[in-house]
Length: 134
Image (cartoon, rainbow, N blue to C red; front, side, top):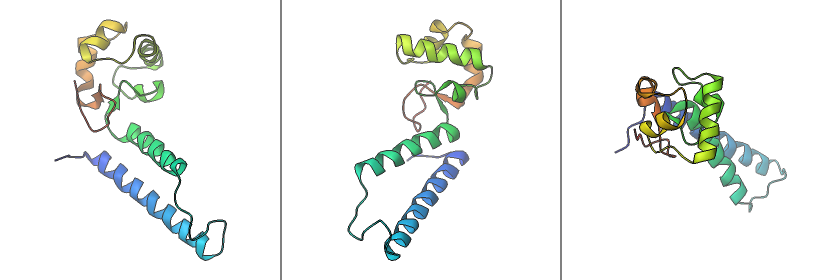
């Protein structure tokens, strides 16, 4: 069973609300004889946009995904400012994804065991927003 934090529940509700608003707008346009026909179906591009929006929303609601987050998101972590965030992104681009706390501490100057310990449950080293690997 998957348990969601309060922020993750809020994100899910907002995502559902956006989907409902989009469906309502689509229905409104069809009924008014707008550019959409009754036979038009969502395209792969529509699905890709929704998937990208869901991932962006997860960046702001769940744990910070060290291996995919940009510098702005990394700055949410305790003890991480613009310079350290830039070093994390640069090292990740140079050496590939981080395998865990020990790996990031060894590869990025300015990050040690104490810094990683302060992050606690607010980070994940996987690409999935729902898995918490430390």
